[in-house]
Image 1 (cartoon, helix red, strand yellow):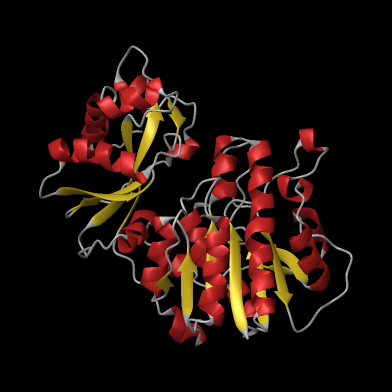
Image 2: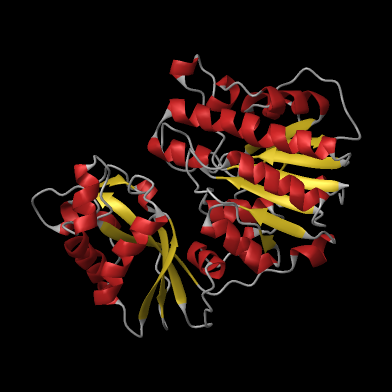
Length: 401
């Protein structure tokens, strides 16, 4: 038996009036997911423990079978693992976003965040801009590391963990109340704005109608993580397929392999087919028992507040990932169990994450059911199937409970 998780990050949502009271998941044309739902099992899972922040860090740990209360030490440390940063126990890692601020008259603290991703900036452009900042601000205590797209890392030697607000929670708001309290972190953010707002690359981006990456934004602070082995826990050799450093870092911490796919970028126009093909190859030719395919696009479209693009991302997931994985495994004659779910909701109305439970779908190629339901939030709630602890869904997929 082969096992595959297809994770549509932030795919769950709220009913939207312009969609006739449907969610983007319910409104989207998803014939493959609906077929699997009719033949499988749907239900709800609570992936965020009460009192914890509904981030992709805590939520994906939960989906992978790790209790976030036990294993979570911060978001950025997981990302640091993915880019090969060897953290010491006294180090603090912080997510270092490149964001777009307004460039209004007045002090830095009075600017507003227009875009948490700087127009989904390329890693190449981001690397040039991060180097410009690091050339002035990096020293033995503060070290910068390039990640992917707008997502980067700061290591603070002998640092302190401060609760900082994600930039996607501050969109369109004045940043004054959300700046770091620690004086040097605040200084580095302010100075980065002075360095970047007139950088030649940002002037070029603005001339092209692109959002400039004109400030750093620190958040997600934490200490060195310690995850138990996924393979030892489940006796399954696993692999991760994701464009996002956070997921790659979770895989490293869990002792799973990362499979890199060319053209996978975490955006709406990522290499969906490449991810699907890599998963089928890993399961049918390369000896893996389990593959976790993470697709970031629904979450990004939720943060952008775009109903149309979120629907499109869900339809791409259905037709360009799930369909190809299903067809590829069946063509190879493999028996398989497939779990499809979001990690958390990212409602387009709010443009950020919530702690609401998410719908899951489990399909077993050897045990087809015959039901009338589709894969969507309200029907998952009506099913009566519910996991109070999201980390138990993985055990259910593996038929351990």
